[in-house]
Image 1 (tube, helix red, strand yellow):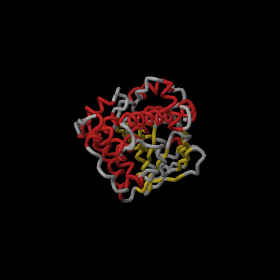
Image 2 (cartoon, helix red, strand yellow):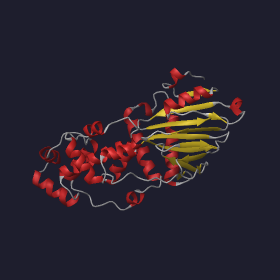
Image 3 (cartoon, helix red, strand yellow):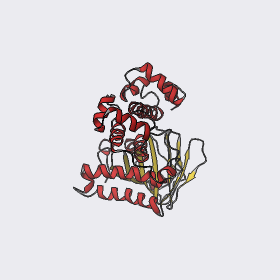
Image 4 (spheres, rainbow, N blue to C red):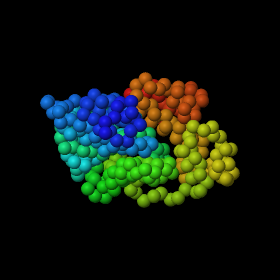
Length: 329
């Protein structure tokens, strides 16, 4: 089967011997990139891709039939490659390169310049593009609180045992089921649950700066009234809240809710709303491509109607202005 670029975005399986066409299709599914075939090996080049769209994750089974090189840079995503055969090297920015094998997957952040090289002719990988903000939200859900700072991930995932092996198997199953006519993944309810399982499973399978906190014994259960409010605010932080509405959600009096928040969260209910919104703004500013958004747009998106007060709160919380965060992204 050979597909044209116009049909590629809607296709689940794609095969081509054209380097230019393969570059185009990969740019549609993943990132804006150009493939380079090493030396005279272009006659052996054949791209095979099987894809599944799982919302916050794009999963692909990918091979080229020869050694290739490529590079790209795109903020807003994490990426995991799980070699099924062969291996390759990855360099993220100016950090030392890492090398994949069938025993260890590689985790990297395309917000920094990525260079792929030494791709073995027999290399075949599970290539998983993951929305960065979705990962952060799942981490907040698992921790039960907003993130103080972005997680730092280790470059390797052991896929021979434990949670790493389970996660890689679940990724591969998603591709197999995607090919089943009227299969489970064609049902939105099942697809949504698998998306959440893959996001949370990734956080349990990788090493990162919050891993010890995830593995620690859970804190004492918060009262149901507090949990109802924190769950709602994390799920829909941009909605217009006031203290009376939050008390109604909690199904307790305002005074009772305020006292419960001070005891179990360490801040008032409305301060919690502000904290969640500030964290969401910061994440988006730090992960947005240059020129894609403005501070004003992001502030309004997450429920800050008064820009002056927003800027003061942001600087007090993070020690820099929102504009500095955006420029630093």
